[in-house]
Image (cartoon, rainbow, N blue to C red; front, side):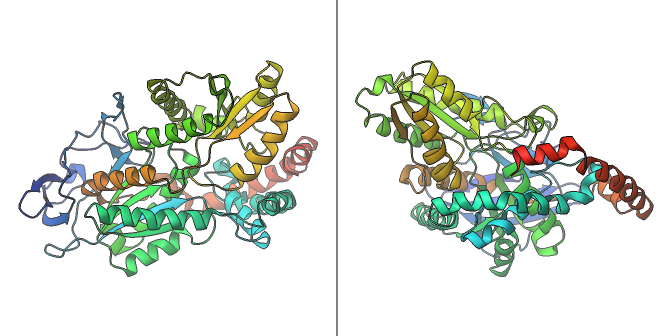
Length: 478
């Protein structure tokens, strides 16, 4: 859905040279037609001495989550819209007129089962997410039963994968380490913050992190999803959860929030990726002959074509920027992009990683460097899917020399760039404002619900027991 942003929504900013604090003044003239009330507030946010703050003009349209965004020049020379920093259009309020800001940073990630016993409930949480399995509105009441069915069917195979990497996902441990390093980096830049970790599908859940944020009386929050590129199924899903939590809580609904929706175009990220790639290339006996193979997590094709997910465009742009940086260093290797981790009987973004590996082997490629471009932490899709399944497939297909770029993890240049992103985003924070939509109000109509339940159940019975669906589950989910 589109959301109109107005010039009076974002705070006016100026930097005080005497104490290096950012003075934020807000002035909202009364306008019932725009949904704003008159408000005046003043706060001071401590920022590092070397920071230069500039305000850019909001675009005419927001995105599908009701966020307004700003256009800016990227560090590598091109112009990007959105630049990745989002603020909410809505009534701007203040917790206090005099209190010192207490800044929090919320890192969002997928989460993962820490033991084999956790695998099935983790999968249930994953597939119960309506942003992962997008059912027609008529069938949405089947979300949880379907998630239960899929999680039970997939659990045995998934357990084998997690057993192969040590019995559980390392994602929580790595994300906690990234949070600690980010906190240190921000402190070194004169911005003391509390850093929180919120996982979408396993502990610590986003809801737990938000409750701790509230308990700590954070007054300004920067939300940093650890996904370089935006997708409905990753960043979008986590934002939806935050919206639901914040709009139901009086304290949270007034808290200024800034969301860094995507950061694939940042100079620090691009250079950090190029550093890792160039380092791994040096291991090969003939580095110039190595095919650089970018493997990204896939999403259903319908997300892009029907729902307007920008993930594919952002991914391709990200690869372009990384290769541009490598070429500036004299590295002119051939490269390709493919998508992994598809699930279910639907079309996903192509080309598929497994199919491309076979094709490259058939074409005579002998040396290949795999680059997990949509992941910044090691987890099952890098440690098992790429390192084991795809490596074995590549060697069987005729590729003789295999290498893999590690995930960024706590690479210092990467962490410092995330710290810079937080510093840039913090002054742009405004309170979330997500009023109930018409569709949500309709869902509370008892008569409509009964009608949908009756016809949905009838159609679901036909769907689930059709030979085609049974075959699909057998071929794709077991």
